[in-house]
Image (cartoon, rainbow, N blue to C red; front, side, top):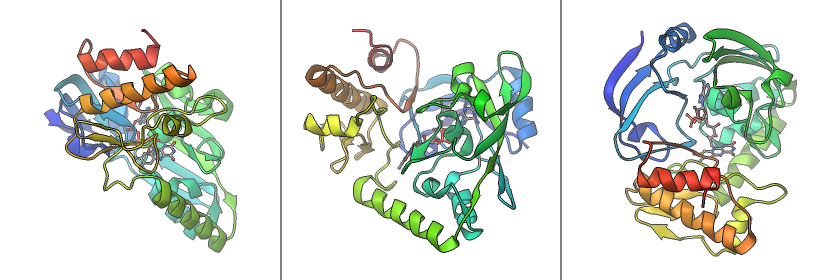
Length: 302
Ligand SMILES: Cc1cc2nc3c(=O)[nH]c(=O)nc-3n(C[C@H](O)[C@H](O)[C@H](O)COP(=O)(O)OP(=O)(O)OC[C@H]3O[C@@H](n4cnc5c(N)ncnc54)[C@H](O)[C@@H]3O)c2cc1C
């Protein structure tokens, strides 16, 4: 059954632990319930595990569908079928036990398959697109269901046809490689160790990398060269071990985060003439002061 709440507070629903109330929140528990909701045309946005978003701390005039209850998956031989809300680390661990290789990188971050496919998530030289076969999507413009193969997904760095054409990912199918359980487990442990050394754990609420890497460079390297590690804005802080992460250190609000991002963005622009683009998505109201700063960073309006 779909659960629906009015004036729903999203703060504890996000890995950043930031956000006000949204107008309406719906939690379908199956793909067919999700399709029914999408057909109503009443919702502004579909979200997964909210690990790559920054909600405004003000009340937000949007109705949102959250997919985290649509979390089924099936593994048959080396074929993995997942629903949009299924979380990466759960499937990654299960595949490792079955000696299936290709999802070792998913162990380190809390994304759902909908979010990961939408932005072609990657880490440690593996991309979600690597083992991808096909997906069932909902075309919101034409209210139609489509099956897309890998070419039709137009995967690129942090993008796919899903966000370009406002499709909603419903289900996807992957083909993994058969491998050795011990080796797969070893790679996963190495990935976990790498993150522990360099990135914030979720006990420091965060939303992963803040900016996308510019071509042939690393946003973290440029921000570090600008001396930004440890920089504070209100309750938000640039993580001391990696300058492309912001942590919610002390009850930060969305303005603290966006002001800090703007400082990071202008430092790199002035020093290196490179305009970093946010990797995280902002969800807020048109015309607010933080949305104006956000627009400068996303649309390069000075
Ligand atoms: C500690 C930490 C480490 C991270 N490390 C990495 C990393 O190494 N590599 C990496 O790529 N990311 C990383 N991330 C970021 C994040 O986990 C990924 O971007 C993930 O793919 C987001 O999935 P989500 O379900 O949380 O998406 P959400 O944050 O819920 O949504 C993100 C975007 O996806 C869209 N979306 C979600 N579901 C659907 C759907 N069903 N259909 C259509 N669109 C949808 C939303 O509309 C939104 O635009 C990290 C995050 C954290 C907190």
